Amino acid sequence: MKFWICYMALCLAGCGSLATDRMLSNNLLDVAPQSDADVRHPEWGYATKKSVIAPPQNIPQPQPNRDMLIQQYLLTSGIEHEFIAGAHPTIKLKQTVKFATGSAQLSNQSLQWLDRVARFLSTQNGIEVVLEGHADSTGAERFNDTLSQRRANAVKNALIQRQLAQNTIYTRGFGEHVPACSNNTQTGRACNRRVEVRFILAE
View 1: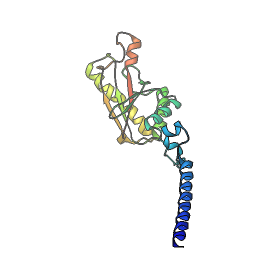
View 2: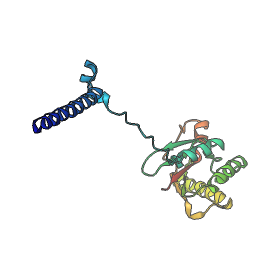
View 3: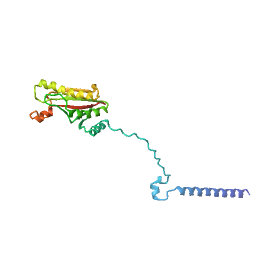
């Protein structure tokens, strides 16, 4: 009797083991590679990872360059100029203030042009104005040295009368020593009787 009981127990255990093996076998077959491609790329059997897109952030936009804004304003105002880059950027106005022979008096045309220049400067901060007076070769050299300085001072006074700060305007006279044109012709001498205007852009 004990023999039969042991025999039946062994049979039942064997059936349970077989069922378990079959269950494991079925589970293994479910996840086993199904083709050569699966074997070469085992990661294909893994769950696909979802990429998460971060919400857009508010990135500050670059501000317009101050020097470019100044140049655009000058062009809009009809003031032709040349921009000279460097540690202290400079703007040289292409138009100059012209004078009669031996005179430091400003013409009405020059005063109207200085009105436009003054309106521009009144909208800006951190700009220093340099006025460079010149003369032609007519007359004595010493006289021309003094005359060129008087011409620069005349332009300075006109700008001050138009509400520009005196401590931002600098003058210097070069006499006849830095001609822009030839002094051999009347047209050339008229070209040399001038005041050049420069802006120095402070940081």
